[in-house]
Length: 487
Image (cartoon, rainbow, N blue to C red; front, side, top):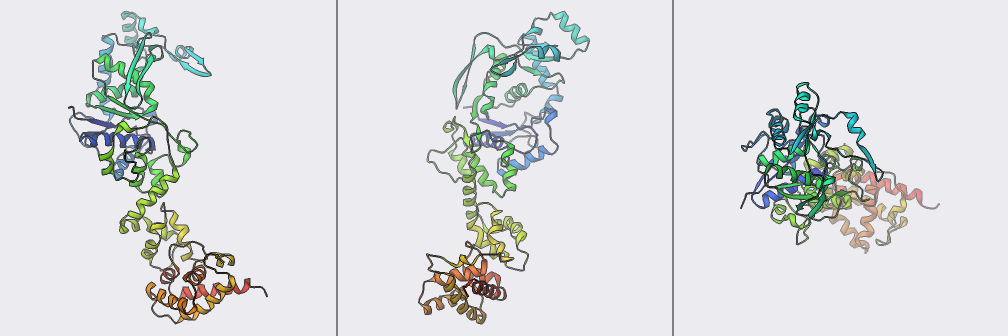
């Protein structure tokens, strides 16, 4: 059996789109599931779209997501260079294009911009341009004269315009297209650079790629690829076209969504492992429907035959839930390293930040959520005294005022301000008063935080705030309640 070889071939045009990350992930999983090789190739021949620093983004993203390539620009496996501009400099693409010209499977095209624009037609409200093979019929003398005069040219693929072409995709099955729709696509542009499609076929063949993974927007180009493989007499790779990724409104996921790239998501407080896990499920699911999976588990379970044809919805709410699960399971030291900057944004006082982090760890879905959970540690917010009323706890403003007044001297007399000691002190008061825990803890926690929801209970908050601040906030709660009482 031939060893499986897949590749990820991004263009350095900026941040890595979620769709590109999924392509890289699926190519990686297909290879690793079968013990094959995963290659990285940089496709930088489109100089107009090249973005400075984008290659570094590709390397950084691959490393952080764990998609480590076996071969690439920095790991020569014997079929390099792995950067298309370097391959272009060697003249490799022009060599193969000229081979096709000699075999009448490609031809020089000298048509200028005006002539090409004259071929444009409007079909169903859309402008389309189908080349009319004009230059295919030039004599050899005309071709030689044009070349000698330095007339600009492109090299076009000579596709049949009658009959049909059928190709097979592992997800979408057999697809047949009319050859009249294929057009004679450009192989070498007027600047001497290969087109994306032509370079792909040449590089994939020479690098021994067995499985080509890409988005389904390339389905329409696949017949042209196949025509090239056939023209060279090369074996066609296995095609795996991934379904479209849409937003919640079922529109194509765009940069305007604010979460279309890997780096967008990391900046929004998502964990890399959660992003990879979530992206893996955009168009595929394991047989057992397990949702939380490490990269190693994905490698074991991934079978591209279970991919869906239907568009995959980028469910931001689900991603946040999944991220929360990863945060809960995270080693505390690693969690604190990521959480500390967010904590320090809102807490400048000399408090036990690690203790605050422990309290909030299981309550957030993304790291920025931390701030709204803990901002009260810095300054108690303005709050309405109606917050002291809680039907389940059977508390109201009057009962809360009574509790705070009775608890205040106990807190002031407390020397051991550890959580356990404080809890024992308040529990004793609860027992003596003959009420339920919530009857006492709710008003105390409200006075300490000014919030309905907090990452810890009353005594945990007191432990972090310290005695002086806790006493001050309980007194403030008493004052607020007294002012709210009818005269």
